[in-house]
Image (cartoon, rainbow, N blue to C red):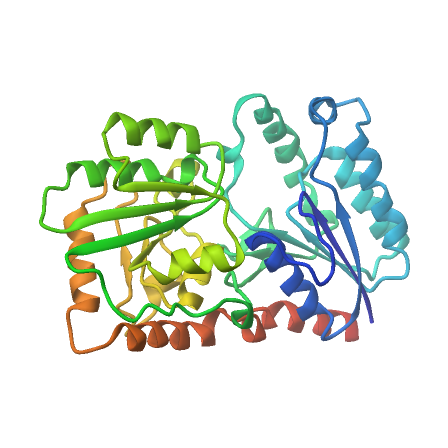
Amino acid sequence: MKGLYFSEGVAIEKGIAGDGIEKKVLSQINQLEDISSIEILSLPCNQSFLDKILFLLPIVNSKRDKQRNILKKKAMGKDFIYIRKPTLTRKFLNILRNIKKNNSKLLILMEVPTYPFHKEYKGISKLLILKSKFCEKKLNEVVDKIITYSNDKFIWDIETIMISNCVDFSLVPMRTTSCLKKNTIIMTSIANFNYWHGLDRLILGISNYSGKYKILLNVVGEGKEIPSLKKLTKKLGLQDSIIFYGFQEGEELTKICNRTDIAIDSLGRHRSGVKYNSSLKGKEYAARGIPIVSGVLTEFDNMENFPYYLKVPSDDTAIDIEEIVKFYKKIYINNKSVKQITKEIRTYSYGYFDYSTGFNPVKEAILEKVEN
């Protein structure tokens, strides 16, 4: 069996993993290689400003459009194509039509990491919403299955394969904290920060808090929201409580996680219209063995006997730090050691969110379709 993995905007070099998304893509490829030989087609993310503008226009053939045409050649002789997060356009739809016309038995799988996603487009990029909507109405002509992390059984009249975001636990070191800092709660949020991460809610909550605990927040990552988050932090006089690290990886990231009591997942997904989200970062936190706070429904909301997760309201109110303090006390002020708590979180999560099992529904769908 032969397959093609197609991705845009992610730099893929086999055997080398950078950020969380790149690691995720490489893990998916590794899983697919268990059942098939895989050819990788990755289009670069370093588009010039002119290329980005041309891509928005309906008639002009941009550099990106020309690059996408490579997909037609690469699809020849394949049994299936796994397409990850493409920008949907009429031209891309026509490429898929051409591929399907030449090989009607070809299985086309398309991963849609976030659904719905139209509200993620801002400024001039909103033009892509019109392109996407046109394409969405006709995708069921060519796409066999949608891979989703939502709880939608159908997207664009195409049957979905519902899975959870997973991580390769063997690549994520477990937290090694052995003791807590007295009367201090250290939180960490790791992301490429955008408005839907809602970290402003947490910063406002820290400003409002007047309890006995010292609250510290590590902000790890870059992103469009960082300047406004720094401005808000300065305005509220919280420079000693909120530390901005920028992008971190490897040993430096592990050091930050090792001194983290509570991990912060997305707090503003309601802003982009998402009510349920299988967060990749949440699974990385769980793999490290860190308790999690989230502002959107996730798989953890339905997991029984898992006290290491707190769901806060999905709105724009400031986060109530007293609720986080209660969550902290419930977890740590008991007879369990930090090491034991860490191990329980990681062990429990492994069965749900490690790639060894989490990607099986996709592999099974491919085997069932192709072998029949």
